[in-house]
Length: 159
Image (cartoon, rainbow, N blue to C red):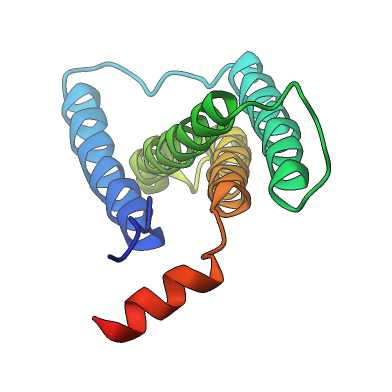
């Protein structure tokens, strides 16, 4: 029996592309009605960095236990929750990358204006931080993956 592969990079790319297109369409529609693209809050970037750091700490603890270091605080349930949190972080990061890139695309037609060009940089920085969150989630997913036992390899060869 083949174990579940988890969240794949192609899923994250598809989620980011879909959100980019959706965000761009909605923001262009709002702009045609006279609304402007909202400014990104720096609290959002700080929260994504905090979440990514917490994910990495929790994932590292699970990885150490998986590799044989004793830690009674890391139970199988906590390890499973860390895995799910890592997957959720990866998907959230990918969707946020799409959202921020959609904002950039909505601002690009006016990029020749200095004030609009200055509004693009915070969105690009937020997209980079969201990408770091997605990478942290994928790394935690890899750290939580159990290695196959030797007897499981024999079962796979016989099938």
